[in-house]
Amino acid sequence: MDDDEITRDAFRAARGDRMAAERFVAATRHQLHRLLGYLSSPALAEDLVQETYLRAFAALPGYEGRSPARMWLLAIAKRVAADQLRVQGRRPRAGRTEDWVAQAEQHGATAPDHGRLVVLRRLVGELELERREAFVLTQVAGLSYAEAAELCGCAVGTIRSRVFRAREDLTAALREGQRRAAHG
Image 1 (cartoon, rainbow, N blue to C red):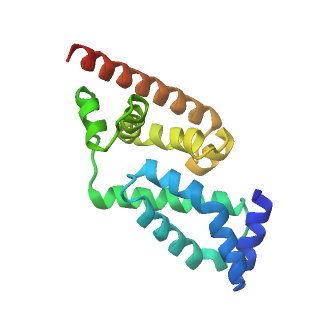
Image 2 (image 1 turned 180 degrees about the horizontal axis):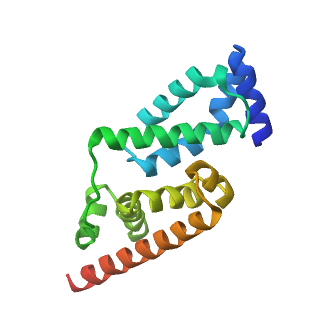
C-alpha cells in the first residue's frame, strides 16, 4: 500500500471507518515493529507498537495531513521510543563485544550468520541515539534520507553523516569482536 492510500485510510479511520483503521494498521505494523525493535529493544517492541497506535488513534481526529500518515505515525513511534528510554533512565553503555559468541549462543543462535545478526542488533542498540535513529530509519525501516531528516528535524546531510558514522561504528565493533573471539 502506498503513502497516499495509507493517508486516505487514516482520514477515514478518523471519521470512524473501522475497516480503514484495520487497513491503516496492517499497512504500517511491520515497519513500525522493526523501527521500535531497534530504537528500544526487541523485547519491548510489541508493547511500544501498541502504545504508538494508542497515541496515534487518540490524535487521529486532529491529523491534518501535512505529511503522509505513515510519516506522522513513525514520528509518534519515535517519541514513544524516546519516552521509554527516558523512563528506563537508559545511559550509553560500553560495548561488550568481547563475548559476542556467548551472547549469540545464549540467545539460541547456532549458525555463525545468525549469531552475527544477534550481535549486530545488540551493537545497533549501543550506538549513540542520534546515529541509531538515523541508521534504523534508513537502513532498517527503509525510509529515504529525506524522510528520515523530516522525522528527526534536521538536514538530509546530517542524516547521511549520522548513517555513515553509525556504519563505521558498527564495522569497527564487529571487527573488534571477531578479533577478540579469534584470540579468545
